[in-house]
Image (tube, rainbow, N blue to C red; front, side):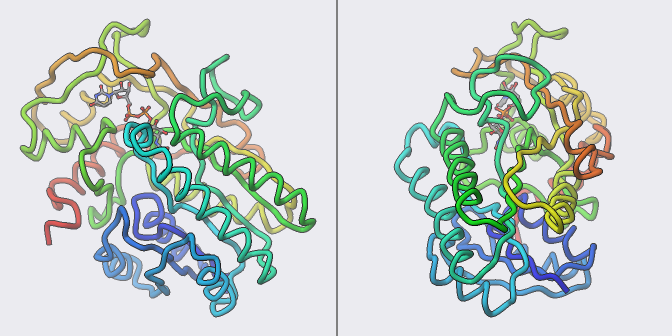
Length: 340
Ligand code: WQD
């Protein structure tokens, strides 16, 4: 059995990646210090998969701890999901974002060099594309000149990994550039449980539907889009997780570094997301139009053809499924994992 080290395995992406790994016959080890997650998710993962996996309550910046895990569990590849990802917060705490997002990546690379692990899947983001020059966005789009330290930290990690793979022949690195993951595992047992004040649209809609806020702030309805609201490439979190397992298959025979977009290729507006959530919850969602958020753009949409070509991966789940699964998670867990 191939054992995969998943950093941030207690988080939104990492927990769904563990489900897909276990379902597809991999072993999993989660390394998470619960900086932005709850340990309660681990038992839920065991319950819904019927399988066990190892966990380590450690800081991923600790290279010695990472090397110890790689040796003890005979790790075949690393999937690096641990990181700070709140865009507005990153502009207020740049030092913490660079320290953590680069520190975890550097520690993992050092541990891999020490232990002979050579396969790495990186949780990157479409934010690395910075100021957009063309649409839909292919992996050839320039990277960098990001609008916030979060995106810049991701672009820097991609550079660290590219240079490291070039220095150590035999390493295979896949940079997965996520667009906008939403939804939850259809069981309703795991989902997005953001600590603090959420800033993404879906957790905010779910706050309204669970009575925490009176209305959803729509940040800008005067964009040059069909209904005036922002368009993004939303994909189901389980599609995203399956993309990680597909990347592991590619690493069976790939060495070097390659970037791959994970998106649907079909953008959706805020209004379309709101309509989808009203249908899922069976009730109207009050909104309040606000000014645009600084740095926000009208439209982001992936060209996902490279993922199809190289990984044989494409999204399968619809807007209706994304909304129904998001609502099932939130209605059963109105306070996320803290509600237990
Ligand atoms: C989506 C749309 C807003 C909040 C961010 C990160 C990106 C990735 C995904 C990590 C936009 C509108 C939002 C609200 C609204 N994360 N909106 N009211 O900004 O596309 O991307 O999350 O990798 O890196 O940058 O996602 O969900 O914040 O916004 O109307 O209260 O919803 O204007 O059009 P975004 P988002």
